[in-house]
Length: 93
Figure 1 (tube, rainbow, N blue to C red):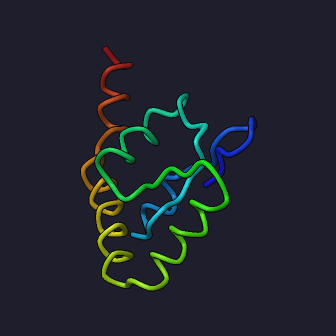
Figure 2: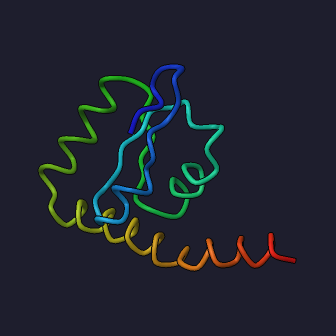
């Protein structure tokens, strides 16, 4: 997902649609959806290579955890449906 360096974060909503766990770096403060998905869904923020390695191994070795985090991401996307319509309605006013 990115966010380890200073260039930002890739779009994490795209993989969330597919119901997979998402791992991102520590530099995600400018991305409200990332902060929300870390607290509510299946996004994990890591700060170094050791954490990345541990999380990858955890997801690879535990299919139920991988499924759980993926389902949380998928549910997050489902819960956000209709946002574009709400924005358009707001702009239309």
